Length: 470
Image (cartoon, rainbow, N blue to C red; front, side, top):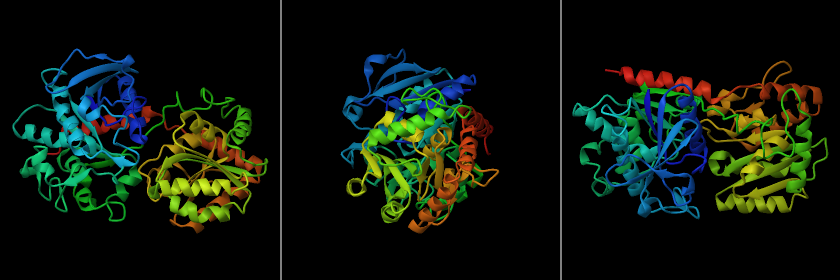
């Protein structure tokens, strides 16, 4: 198949979250399975242009630069006025005021890029999140005129981010009022970019089977549950994968010692090094809990704020890395300063430290309100950091409740501080039995969430979209 994969961020060139990781890994996995894959993404000011070259093809209104990564061709859309800035979506916690214009322009570039792939374009236009969704509308209009056989697949990575703008964007962006309807991109008298992806794509996917079900209900549907239910026959959940060439303790260059399920001795060295790096006071009987996260309400930080004083009354310590809402950053800084060495905190982004927290922690906490897929728990499993997670979205699909003979972690249902405390207490009981804890750890490390399985499922989705639903 010929696939054009469009994403606002692609690791390692640009990344603010899981979308960047997916866009960096899934196209390579598809290419390894024999598909012709081109990835389109904006050229941001922070991207190192030294590794790029001018593309051999051109489209109206934009300059294209290119690179090749793992068999997939990357095309960067250059527009200095719109994208030549340090941030992807904004700076200093504030979104850029012209994000509607920026990503409407990017979406308009996608069909011309597809047309450069040959007289029939591409088989699949794979769109990701609201920043690319207007291309689904444009493709649907062209199909209506009888042009081409390209099918569109639209992936929701997080329904909480929809790209909602005042309705004057219809004229300002040249969208056309014919699309501003309840069945189109109108949303409470505003323009909703993501809704265009839902309304006009041939197939909609999201990043875990459980999340695909959850978003069809009002609690996690963010106002779009009705539309998602109406398109349930075209909605499917496909778990994200992990690039084990980067995220595996036996090959990880960021660690002070490497280890594996068969030879776990290096994990003890990683734990000791992590405690030194973050200044954590945690003797061997104290369970070190890792957190690598965006500091946001979605990630359960209100619950953590409530639960942490009582957690620190137990034999636990925390290694925390992340950034986000300033109120959470300030609260965590105060909590770390008052913890007597039981909370090691680093705010900001530090790729190496993230790897070392997975490797050096005994357990890994994710008390998310909702979690479309989650990658952190997949990394934690591979590194032998036993997950403690809320049973939601991809967390429910990838972590199973530990017992003596099966299971890989500890799950809780209620979104409450009391539920976190109970789950941590349950984990501590098992942690106090080193042979039992080692069995849980090894079962987690044995899990395989490689991208090849995800790529195979996306192939099935592409074939389904190409067959059509008429």
